[in-house]
Amino acid sequence: MAARDATSTLKNAPQSDVTQARKAFYDKIGRANCTPLWEVLHNLIPVTPHTPCKPYLWKWDTVWPWIQEAGTLITAKEAERRVLVLENPGMRGQSRITHSLYAGLQLILPGEVAPAHRHTQSALRFILQGAGAYTAVDGEKVTMKVGDFVITPSWTFHDHGNPSREPMVWLDGLDVPLVEILDAQFMEKAPQETQQTRRTEGENLAQFGNTMKPVEYKARSKTSPLFWYPYERTREALETMTSGHDAHPCWGYKLQYTNPVTGDWAMPTIGTFMQLLPAGYKGNDYRSTDSTVYAVVEGRGRAIIGGETFAYGPRDVFVCPSWMPYRLEADAQAVLFSFSDRPVQQALDLWREMV
Ligand SMILES: [Fe+2]
Image (cartoon, rainbow, N blue to C red):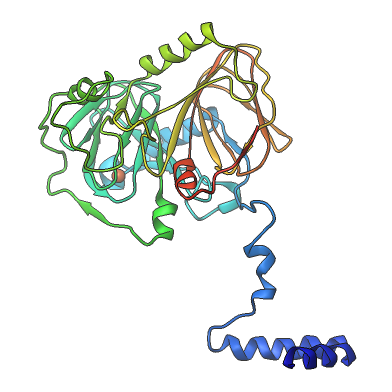
């Protein structure tokens, strides 16, 4: 009855009166923290993903001088982590590379230490330049090389150091925005700057990197117990695949990093991949709901994202937003690392792709 009254009232009233009446109503309910859904519904429930994430490529040749300059301005110890955050142009000031993930380029100079801490945010390291720096996770050191993928699981102590003679740079990927939206952030500094090494280097790879596991192993978390995935093994696996199969029309030859015990994702919040595109490869358009960050290990080519062409080369980083069609091309054989929030979307029955 009341709705019919409103309809007839609105029909006869001038538009300016209706607008004024609505504004007065919004102001009144707004004072008690209520708001009309009909003013925001289309933004809240869009027909297709509506992301602030924009396509972008960070050229290594551009950022490398700035990374070196940062090394002259602040020490790793003073900074705690000396990182240039890769901020998506659609989300400046928010420390995000996609809507749900953080990424940055971290520099450790010879002789430096980035002190030990732990946090609930999970982190991945993907090594872009240098060899000989280490990361220590839960009392085990691993010496990293270009192309290695290293995991720092949620709430594990980690520190980084560089006893080598060359600067080392890696791409950090963290689930910072995801953990932020859940208000589940905790952080703690370790009592000592560097962790006591409790395990022999390589022990973790020996235990979990050979399709076997210690018989007494019991999982403590959903994160892979293997925290170091050396590039030479990944590279060899991809290379071997090229002789037995045709390249996929959208992604060439692509492998997903897994938890070797469960076969599930290596990290519960971040999906990680490595793919090889043969020389001359021209991929078809592809899109998925997980905005994806790519880091180039080898080769050159182009990513055509939403109709915009980005030429890529070694150590470049680029981002493909949710549901925006993109295709990949390679001039020389290319190897690309990538990561996204796909495990979270799949766990929540949200993930979609269009091949
Ligand atoms: Fe950290």
